[in-house]
Length: 239
Image (tube, rainbow, N blue to C red; front, side, top):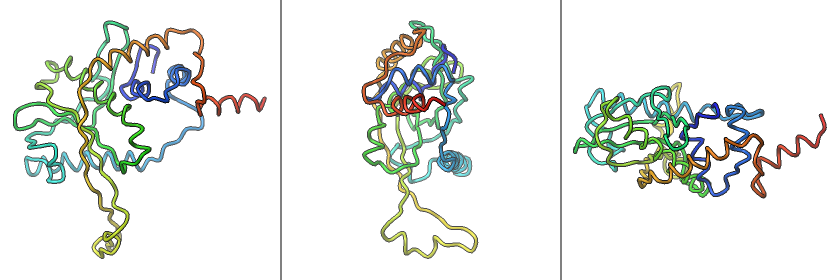
């Protein structure tokens, strides 16, 4: 990102209780192209598959699959625009806030639902990331509200995280149908987590982001920041 561009996900990092202003500043300067970083592509592949599978079901049946029933009656799927179009200019800070939601749905009351898919079990580690996910969804909500006329979006009804949890123990291990001639299957359980609307939090963190990015020098690191300790370790090598 440039110093004036902030993604919904990156802004969400400032919502975490263990966020570090120095790390945020460095990521901005490097446009998030950090050295020695890798992320297993399988998670992106599964998330992409989930979105395609849901869209395909809607195309064939005109409704959501049963495992999404906790979201209520959904009558339409809308493919969200990408971050190049789905953005706003935040007047108070001059920052450009952008992102790409996973899915938009229209419910039986003609209201908009914004849903983010997460391929993970809801572990203690995942729960620690909840402030990031909640802020990210609220950033999408803010953008959707401003961009509603442009994209023909109805009034927003709710925000949701939809976890697809892999079933890796118990009876599923003894189901012979999971083994095909050339393929194996994995079962997942859907868990829906509603997220409260909190647009004010987005405004607050955009203000904090603008303050951090306005600094010509990197801010002080958070005490005990693991990432900063690793960077210091590299500099001490005198390579």
